[in-house]
Image (cartoon, rainbow, N blue to C red; front, side, top):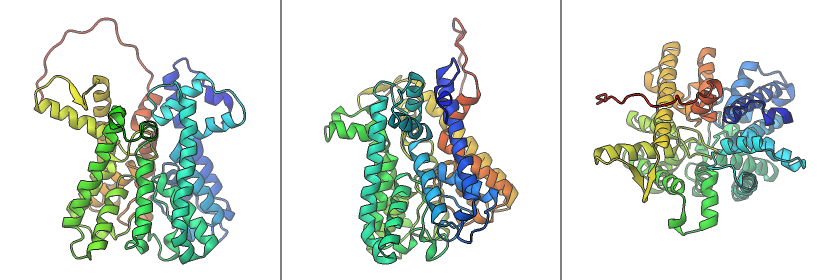
Length: 449
């Protein structure tokens, strides 16, 4: 991207930031799709159709994991490297990576660029944003390399040292960025991690990477600064940790009690916990999802829509959105005026934003499901799972993705894109910001419920 593009020309800096984020992702996707068309990127050295490369580039850049070509068997080493780079840039954020290169080249980071960085990682303020971004980049690379080192003994044993090294790095980055892309198709196409379903080491490492990548960079900073002094944590950190733990443990218990009752105890625990963790935007699976019960599939759809946390590599409507709406509902039930949590009051603007995000995601999800069901003639629950996976940038599938018609693929690509950049980002980028009119209109009561 050119310096002028990053600086922006709009007088409205907030809108300009959202526009740059939007266009940045579009450029990344288009560039990735064109590179993947090169014969050198496929194993058989032929040109992959643009429709397939575009879908792959969208899925990788939006860290989703839905694929129409098996990553291990169709793409060459060069193609896999391109996909991994798209995952890395998409996970960290286009603006974050671009401005980091600007900083490494010795250029001064302008105020407009700092505003974009703030929007990109959902930071609370512009002050200290360059330092935060540096911590984000360094921390991400260290965690990914650490994850690769932990996976290496297993993958080197199974695939040889050099191939195992590549597999370790690829799956570590994919897990940390909550992407769900895998290279296990060498054993069976679209197998994901089913071959390691009973391996506690691989399960533990992948789950840890998913969770760390999904809680958000601001939570990392809070944990690094304050350690175990919980009272000093920001309200957002407390909400993220409590909500994330709840959304992992309760579904895991339900899976253990209802879905995997015929398995031995160790496998039952691993299956239950892994599916609970991966469903919230990671996209790996260790079990055949088509064998799950309909209530189990519905539970996964809900978790996919919720997703990870703000400022993380994950997508979805975010844990804090659900937490704020839950707290707002409990405030109504208790007939109180203010929404409070951990002895802090949550502002009305936050509650309005949470309600808007929930509404937008629900509209995208329900509309996409209905259209997919009509176009493909598949059961509605199956289409809901696929669209929930796309808009939540998860990547789990019931096996229908490769056989979808072009119209359905376009719908999924739009959902993946909106799920990653954020529905509100699109609205702010496309609609001009209006000033509040002078004075306030007369108040009148409307009955609801």
